[in-house]
Length: 417
View 1 (cartoon, helix red, strand yellow):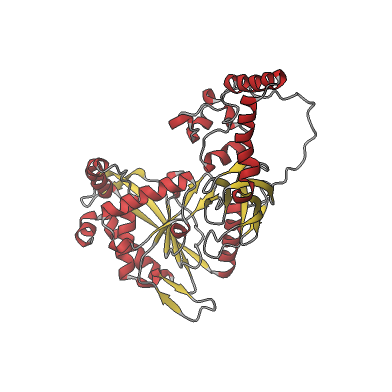
View 2 (tube, helix red, strand yellow; view 1 turned 90 degrees about the vertical axis):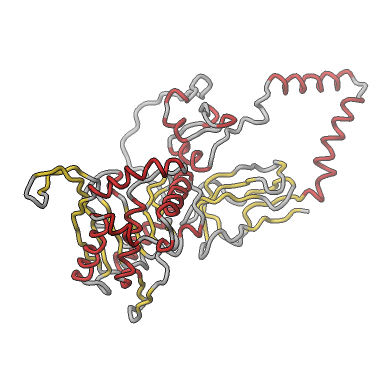
């Protein structure tokens, strides 16, 4: 019996997704729970698995097309009807071949067997790689079967794509050299995360009156504390950056200024104060800008917060963030300084009311309390606020409160829960 596989719900409020890659083809036998496709939602990359065992008879979408949730994704002839005609036929053919008296049949069987032994990779030529790596390979126009994987069982890693020596060009198809073409315009459709970001940013800027407030923060003492704690965290298998400190200081400050941990209703007539402090972090991933968030930061220890940040960072790089990781944020930190730059004007992640962009840390000369010039580690923080709810004075007081924790980490550590 042929049935349609219906694309299930893959996230709250998601009605469509981009078909990034098929792992199957028409006529292929598949097993229950076997991965069949990777799809891209406005939140993350999702792997779709089959609920049936059988033979694929039709694919309804081509790679790159937009698939609709609750609509057929592919057609499958389930095993209950084909096991005798397909899977059983393979067994029958094997028995027939062993019992055949025709020399022609024996020769054909022997030839097929020898070919299979001579080409052991013929049935498993598909490279082992994660969906994120496959997408990067397509963007780089690389054939994954020509890349030497350095991971377990030959798995191709992102680093292998970026290492020229890993690419085997001896069997790569040659490309004919053609005459130079006239210059023109290359058109590329905006899809997936880029399309979602375009819509969200346009909506945020058009509906929220932004203002920006920038402050200088001396993180010399904070970085000294981080270096002192680093070996203890490494013993737990964790990488300790300054981000957990920024988040804990932010959680303490939001408890003192709850208006920054709130939301406006659609017509801006009500303020909804949030109980939990769920801090988002803008992540630059291979598939675009994503903003996962850490839930209930106010209740996490520094160690617990660091562990969660490490997990989210790894998941973002692998394109494996869950829908729950992406929803429910109440305020966002963008660490643009990890790439470069000191001052920015970040766009608020609607419906939040504020966002901060952290610049890179610079060692600069500053005066100490005695008037002596000292080397200080300086970071610029750029806040953008919703001017319907926040004014400059409120933002300045809040930022100074947050700055006080960061410049005097002992004060912050005394209040941590």
